[in-house]
Length: 127
Image (cartoon, rainbow, N blue to C red; front, side, top):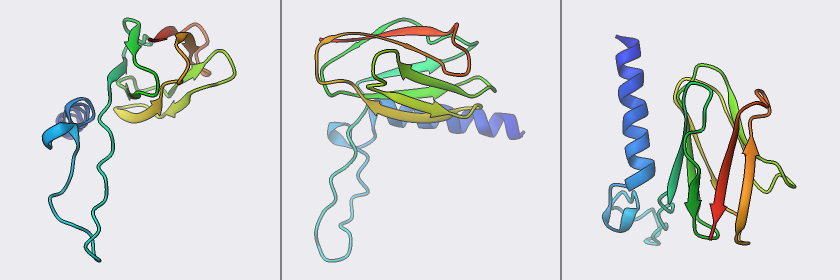
């Protein structure tokens, strides 16, 4: 039963990260915080890297500065670490852990790897 709940939670998180649930992709609560000022919603992810079976999946392409979501479906921890200058680096525990990073602002191809499993490699294209 715990596994079913965990999978449901992961799927819900993925849906929220990718699409958001408020108009415009945000996840606003619909109420203003104390003092009357509104808090801007976190930006929705432009793309998602799903780590499964020690694989990052297909290369993804995003615009400069886009938010990229990462979901680790494996039980082992993984990272998404840029090979050059660590311009992005996300460390995720296993079992549905999620995180985000901001894509570089400079267009180009950014190879990345897993610090724990260096044979895992992926590519992020910024254009």
